[in-house]
Length: 444
Image 1: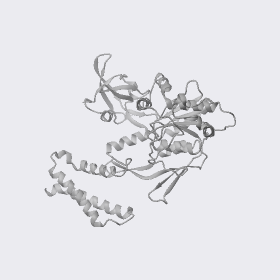
Image 2: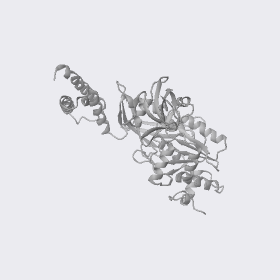
Image 3: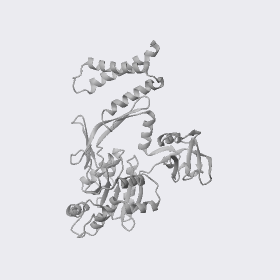
Image 4: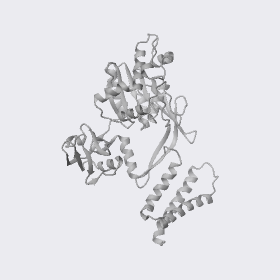
């Protein structure tokens, strides 16, 4: 190898050594590893890089960036399942998802018979101003064929700078022809709270929370206020399949139902003295509204925080199945090339001092559903723009929702000596069993 080819490897070795020694001196709690061990470990890494660079059969597979990214991913993957490395593109998408906004065309898509098909056009989105129609099959984006490309690749091609134009080549079966559809990209706001409605033939308000973005608490507060003004008798908050999101959003949502300055949860990192308490904030309070929270194994992180908080303070009864158990805090630190490290720095603890991490939250009333029912439920809930007929049909088949309705109906008929939903559950929990809505409340 010539000196010019060796130079980047020397630089890589120096950077790795500096980072290792600095990290060691700042963060290490023991000096069990000698400096020689550290240097030897770095040498093993650089030897491996050199061997691959010099000898691997496909030269384009051993570019420095590919090898370094792969090495970082390998390191992070050894830590825990919630820590990960984001490439620059992945890091950008994570930030867009967290904000709940991106520059796109405003459609929902699905693969039907291995074809990328427009499912729905988001009202007031960029595509609503174009000639694009539901059921159009997207064949190409700006001349790039989508053949053999997955959903993520297609989305990456379709999204772009706000104000820029993208030209879709689509096949329209009704016309049996291909056509070009130009669309000007714009900011598309993805709602995190959907299906807001009163359940038919009841006075119970329902909302589905898809994720916790930076705006979810604002929308949640407005939705709760609207239901209260409409004299709604109870709330059903559906967190099934909700992977979580922004911690501060969950704290704000808990604060609507918890007295100011009361503990919502706390986090604690490697240093046991470094505890951070999260307290309920001031503002509007809704202490008296009965709440049922629907949860399942897809409910994680911030959705578990909200569930645990409402349960700890006796504000809600949880119905469904045990949650995922993602009770750790990750920080995301940008690296110099736009990539980022996401790694765990602390764990969540509930008001009662219990950890959620790898444990999850048990529902008050467990209602199991079949794998096929779960698949159908996931598909429906992730469709953020369903029509009313689809909602009505599935409501009747949703055993966990129907159990919530049975429970609330029983509470509504209670004798006047019971003052809260959770008191009623404590007194009558033997009347609620795990066999589904049709048997969830025994006749007394």
